[in-house]
Length: 403
Ligand code: CTP
Image 1 (cartoon, rainbow, N blue to C red):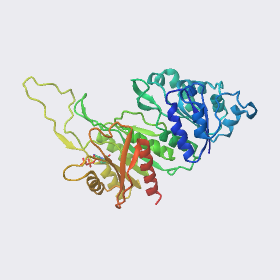
Image 2 (image 1 turned 135 degrees about the horizontal axis):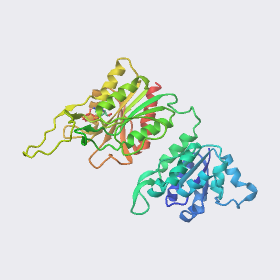
Image 3 (image 1 turned 90 degrees about the horizontal axis):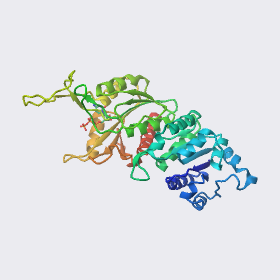
């Protein structure tokens, strides 16, 4: 594929070098078009050496080749990483004041932009409007990652990982109808349930919802129609899926079981509370002056995954059901042994095993999992961003569905 890699003038420009390598190593022919500002961060010699092509950011170089027209016209895919607030604004306004924006105006293939900027810039009304405009024209503008930014600040605005940009770009460039889940309906539960104690308090858990969101993105990229049953989460759901918001385990169960008749693949990634308070008081629980403290009695919540499996075994949809298991291991058994027992207990088709501790997995952007099949099979550990893990899980589900 002929790819134009536009590079905006931000500190994350150095990460575009890794993205360029990923493209060339997977056999694509890449021409790099940095903005003027980008060349202050990474010199053109780096781009020329890594891409094997001359690099220019001026419409006045090689005028006889009419590069500002030719590059965009011939490109099968244009990727901009990092897309700074300035590049987004110029692209949204349709300016053509350098080679990159000229190329963007000429591009007839898919355009993918990976933003990177300070949180305030990303959240500014002007940037929000520019992103909306670009998306409404069919440009794929990725959500930036959250975390440490250039200075001591942190928040949304980091460039997504190069592997994730590559995956999104290849998905955008795939001819429609080529996804492994084209026409299939995928239901994903995500986030952590909250079990009410009184009108202001609840019992919750540390699930960030990031893995569930990544699964939704991965399924969308494979052409699926995605229903996201979403309990509390720290991150926004991806555009393009149907979102059913829930709070408690009982609400989540109703939403998941309700979606089953129109589901081909169910992935239970939500952290569902196993217990809920036996009683939810209608008014706020007050401190007692007589020195007695309240005692909270818990009752078991239904096992939603198990109920979905029983419904399927009774002849209902869905055809493939996957669960997640977060295991620490304990003196009685290691995480793998616990997960195998859980897989047998739940009766689903495969279980995604996450080995966790108090300092691992929850809220982080990377993950390491092993996929355990009901027939005894076990995948090599999949390690990487939550999106990379999600791609592996969705690919596994698609394989089982096509058997
Ligand atoms: N799950 C569910 N309903 C519940 C609890 C869990 O559907 N009430 C699902 C989760 O979404 C996940 C899988 O079951 O896909 C594993 O959840 P986990 O809490 O790890 O397993 P438990 O069966 O609760 O086992 P244990 O608490 O003993 O680890």
